[in-house]
Image 1 (cartoon, rainbow over the protein chains, first blue to last red):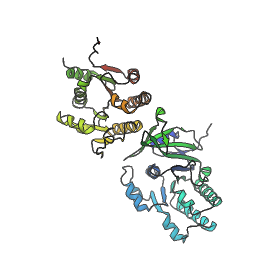
Image 2: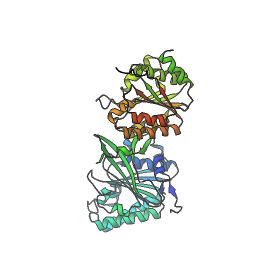
Image 3: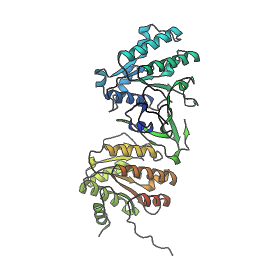
Image 4: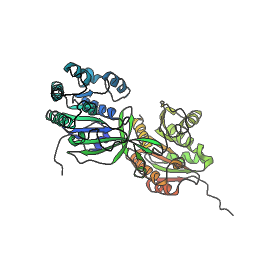
Length: 249
Length: 194
């Protein structure tokens, strides 16, 4: 039986149905998948829908400049740019943070990691952020090198964001042949939830899929769904049972 | 009474939220779809989604415009143009699914466009069971229709599944008999051989 943990409505109708009401508040969710599976779009929709509900939201971009992200997002009807002007939605470039902090090396020391964690905390506290997306945690982990550092970083990051009442999505990039949910195998162990995005090949056609593998604090569907990216956001239907013999790639 | 006037009066009398399995002879394919669109759009003031998997949406749209049916009230979901290597740029009237095997995407596009229609009364036409059966076996097609027909029913959408001639898979037609409110079998009886 599950207790009465408050759930954060993602605003993506089908995902909220799958999760039986949304993501339990304060959870750290690993959104993982290969390239082109819709990770950035689904997480941005999560932020925008939250900001529209009055929950301040931050997208921390590690892999691409926020200007480029903004350009891509303008093609979606759900993306409301006025939220940025109204200081409800924040797009932050981690490269700028790195520069300000003087973190210019490719290999972070333990002290660097502590500074980075402090920077995340300050941003979340100062801007009263309730929804955070980090795109991608894989790119940050690449600078941490050692598994123990990665584990400590993600564990401390998750703890501090949760303590501040933020619900977090960590985007994880995996290769097409990966059998794990993350590159380092650490991220998935620390996360409260795992949402797996994928591509399934059926008779030569590539179908976008989504599956909630784990979500602490709520009973949820674990079925595989097919996704479509429409101008007004993500839509999903269950994968047809007689069409599951395709190959996941 | 002619085929078209028969069909027109039958469609005009059907309740608002009907779910119909319509079966016609091959030579009545175009009269059936044009009469259905004309009745639903011009006489009953419905807006609709037309799932085109038999012929490209542009070809159907051309016929619709020739017959002066208000094309703005119809959104086409085209499942064939990609497969034949045609240009498939989404327009105001036409949205494309890459392949007829991507039945979930057909579902997503159909329900999405039905929800976007401004009219209170909406219809969806699947044209046709036969052409979808070229790319999908009976099991997955039955599952597809079972889900989409019931989903559209919960949204009060008038739904028509068209099959042509006597070659559509019997297993799927029997399922349609079960889940549809009515089977309109407008085919001439098969002549006994010998």
